Length: 374
Image (cartoon, rainbow, N blue to C red; front, side, top):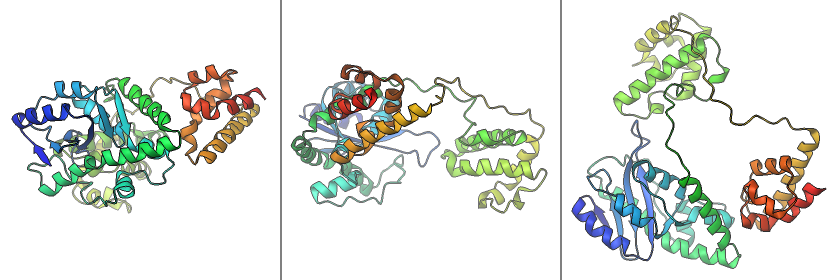
């Protein structure tokens, strides 16, 4: 295992990695410990070596990831890792073997990396460091070894799962699922600036009047404090408490926040004076208004006949899933079944336009069309 923390060491390691026949990848971030998530480690395994690379050092990765994109890559739950890398470095992998997707297509009950390592390698991977602050430097040796283990066993795991998929005739299913994932990630657009509406957290719609204004002021205070202290917002005050505090203040105007029985310790303690002043100031602030985004889709009102058809399509889907011992959503998501119920395609060739993959059409397409025709 090699820790790579300098441009010189990376230059040597990258040439060895890019010459390998396959590469296993994982990443670590610091979202549990800091205001803004950042890429903190890149773990890479090849047939010859395990590398733990430090992206917080002045290493240039663009050329490396451009070349890595055309290689055979192995990841577990690739979606999160690729998204994290793409936030920092251009990365468009062409071929990925995702061991989590493989576990889903094999009908495994437990699909975590630790479960797969135990199942296929007889190894119990430690979970002790899952919540570590990966941005800390220098990193403890035990953290580096923990990180390296996340890719060390992926090749053995993937080889075993390829054999199982092939035995069940599902290797092509896996290829199609992974290809769809990569297509989805490639189509990602830069995140839109939502700073003006970020305070409109889940649950805000039920608040009325000044309670909504209080919520906005509380969110702005929390965000500023989290940014100042470089901590995740939820570690300053959980969003559920923001909603409850807004409700309580609306029902108990001019009351000391310390009288709120359910208030967390930091609200009654270190933040009490600040919050009391904020809540008083909020009463004179302009009324906050929810700025709902334009609706891309209008919620369909289902007729009784359409609802019955949708239920019957789910029955067909669930029957195939039970026979294959798979989660029903792998055969067809509810959203796709709703599309089928509305558009009522009549030919197998039309099913692909609804979002079904070739293997899903081959598996359940005929029966879904029969139900639509009936």
